[in-house]
Structure formats: C-alpha cells, structure tokens
Image 1: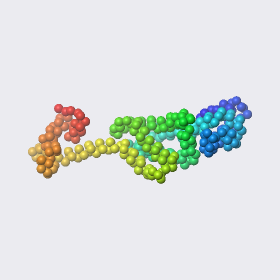
Image 2: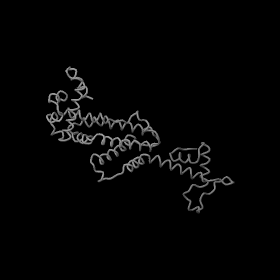
Image 3: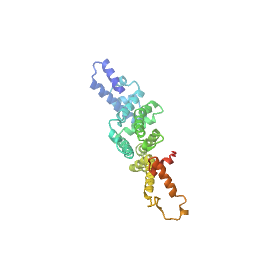
Image 4: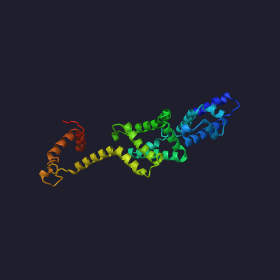
Length: 291
C-alpha cells in the first residue's frame, strides 16, 4: 500500500527511526483519522483533531500525510485493500455442480462475505457510507473500489456464465450485473439503510428466486422436449403396421392432433435421417429442412 512505501522512504532518510516505530505511528495516525472522520465527517475534521486523537506530534502526521485529503485517501485505500475480492482461481470448488447449485452458492457466498465484514469490522459500514458521501469530492476513491472489487467479481461470474451454453443466455455480462445488483440492493436495505423491517425479505427466498430466473429457460426447454418424448413413446403400431389411436374422442374433436398419416410420414423421414420422431420434430421447430 502507498502508506507503507512512504514509511520506508521516511525510514531511509531518518536513520534514527526504526521500522516498528514508524509502522506503529502510521497505525496510530490512521486510527485517529478514522475516529475523527467517522465522528465529525470529512469537512469538520482537521489535522489538529487527528493529531490529538492519534497521540502523536503534528510534525509526525505531516511527515507521512501532507494534508487531510491524502489522509482520507489512505484510509479508504486501506478499506479497499482489506476487503478485496477473494473469489478467484484459488476457490474453484464453488463453481462445481449444476448451474442452479453454483449460482445459489455464489449468491450465498457474497452475502456471507458482506455479513462477515460487518461483524468483523464494526466501522466498515460507516466507512462505506463516508466514502459514498464523499464520492463527489473524491470520485477516484469510488472508482478505485469498483475497479479492485466489483469489476473483478463481474468478470469472474460472467466468465462462468459464458462457459454454460445450456443456459442459453443472450447477454451473460448483463445477466451478471442483474444477479449481483439484486444482492447489492438486498445488502443496502438490510445493512446500509437498516430498513430490513420496512421491506422484509428472507435471504433464502431472494436467492431461490434469483437463481430460478436465470436457469428458467434451461428448465423449461428440458421439460418441453421431455414431454414430446413421452407423447411419442405412447403411440404403438397395430399388427397391420399402422399407429394405434392414443385417444378415444371423435375425429372432429381431434382436428388439431397429428394424424396417423402424418405420423407415418414423420417416421419415414426420421428413419431416413437416422433420427427419432421427437428429434425430428425438435429440429423442424428450429427451422431445419428435410427431404
């Protein structure tokens, strides 16, 4: 991190300072700065207040951070570095299984990670709110966080969706943004805005619905083709070779059903092309032509 590099430079210039003392002073300054920024906000915080909160001299503070803006940037950069995305090639097991299982595992993983950050780092939410509040003054901080964390997550999930052609997604990247956006909205309501009681939503219900929206096409297509296979398997041939009727209603009630002659013609074409009738119907539906 930049703060550490700056620390090394100061040590080299001042041989009377040792590494442990410099690191401790930087930590004290950052703790003091966090206390002041979270208590008073950016505008009302002064370097004098930070100096008093850190318990070090003003000279020491300015030797590491030239002004309040650089101190604030260092504080937010530490937040970003501490909570970088840990979903990478080191955790391949999360991508094992059917798409519905993987997407549910991803959603729960992200929500678990956010909940853990909130519980392990009490000031995490306040720092996030502060960064968002000051994004107009320091847009590069928010952009840096998006670049280091959000962009990485989007790329990883998009790459996974692209590797699953059976999902038949027209735009995997946009699907990823929708997938992650739903979870961001959930965490905003539950944690950032503390309004879970105003808009209650069970986490499991959200995850299940979100996953079903993405895999629905795959499931529906599978069910549709399964139904065709079931229908064709019921029809049997009589001793004369003709298909037996699979319904008892009068013929005028069956005007929209496929006739025996049509089934026979389908069977001839299917055998000629080494296909089952179900496969032939499916390929006809996709616009393929056969002689």
